[in-house]
Length: 193
Ligand SMILES: C[S@@+](CC[C@H](N)C(=O)[O-])C[C@H]1O[C@@H](n2cnc3c(N)ncnc32)[C@H](O)[C@@H]1O
Image (tube, helix red, strand yellow):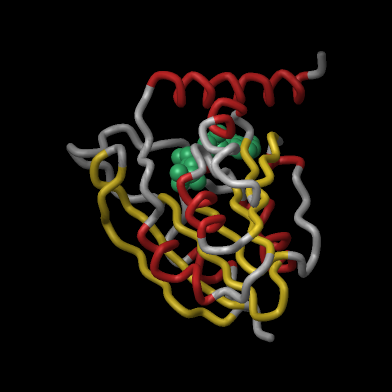
């Protein structure tokens, strides 16, 4: 087996173990609840969908959802909750998003910079992007073990990455997360029709 293939299996195993051993939030993200319905109806893409809390919300609001994650355990937690959810068990390092296909793309608590241009181009005109994930920040007593820098946004990075879209909302702040208080960046943007 090649090193790349082994890496995928390791990542899948790691996330499967987490979903078996730990509790993850079940409620949809607040930013998704607040902004998803700005999107024209149609197809949705939930990148690194995890236990599907946001995919299920979108399906219940009339979207047909492609829900992608490397963890089959995460996907198994929700894929039978709606016939409008299409689970895709795949490594996002190898996933290419088709152009102009999606009315809405979610990227919540996950970061792959390689995907930025695919995300932009994957939106149909008028389509909505909701992106929220962790940023670099000074460690503190609530969050003493910062993750690898590869998985953390820098200041203003998310804003700059999507300036070709119409920015509807952008904020960098310190908010609650599973890990305590974390630095988070949130963006909502629309592909100009
Ligand atoms: C912190 S969880 C966020 C899940 C979900 N977006 C949410 O907000 O509830 C990160 C997710 O990224 C997935 N993931 C990590 N690396 C991945 C990869 N290379 N390809 C696809 N999914 C990946 C994990 O399996 C996990 O479900």
